[in-house]
Image (cartoon, rainbow, N blue to C red; front, side, top):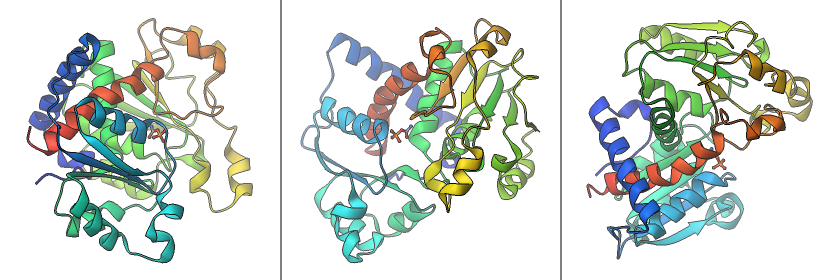
Length: 305
Ligand code: CP
C-alpha cells in the first residue's frame, strides 16, 4: 500500500513514472477518450482547510477515471472532528468506506498520524506549512512541459518562504536533476525557517538567500512566487505588517528573460500585479490545469494501476 505523505519519499524513477503517466492522462483528457480505470472505486476528499484547486481537481480526476467521490469540504466544522474525534478515528472510518483517502489539514504532521492507522492509501493534500506533494508533482510536470527540461535551471522562490509548503514540495524533485540553482528571495520577516535552512545544508543543496528580486530577475528561468499566508499568522497585526512587502510588479517583466516562466500555486492575492496575468510567461493558470492530469496519474499510482 502506498501513502503519499511527502515529496521527500519519492525517488527519481517514481517521479518519472508519474510524470509519464500524467502525460498520458493529459492526452486522454484532450481526446476525450479516458480509460475508466477507477470504475467501482470510491475516493474520499476530506479537507480540514479551504481549497479550490486541490480538492476540486482531485475530485475531477477521480470522476474522469470513473470513480465515485465522497467529500467533506469543511471537515473542521462539518465532520465529527468538531465534536472532538481524533484524526486516527476519522481515518479508520474513512478507510472503511473509500479506496483512496485525500486529506488536507492545517496542522503539520497530521497525515503522518493518519497514516499509522490507515488501511487504504492516503494522499496528503497539504498539511500546514509542511508538505503538499501533489502540488510539487504538478509543479515539476509544469516546468518540464514549459521548459522542455528539468536541469540547468535557475529557480527562484519569492515571497513567504517561512510558511511555504509548495516550496518544500518542489525542491526535492528538482534536486534529482543536474545544474539547478536555488535562490530564496524574501523579506527577512518571511525568510526560510532556520530548521529548513539547516535541512537544505545537511542534504548538500546549494542555495542563495536574498531580500530583493532585482538582482536575480535577469537570470531566472523559473520564478515561483508565493502568497503571504495570512492563515499561518498568530495575529492579524503581524500579517498586516508584511502583506505588501513582496510584490512582482508589471515593470519587473522587462528585466525577465523571454522564456522565463512565472509560477504560483494559487490562490494569489496581491503578490503579482494583475496585469501580469495576460503575459505569456505567466504560467500559473496552465500550472493549475496540469494539476488535473497529475492527480489522475497519482490516483492510479497509489492503487498500482
Ligand atoms: N495550490 C493549492 O493548493 O490551491 P488550493 O488551496 O486552492 O487547493
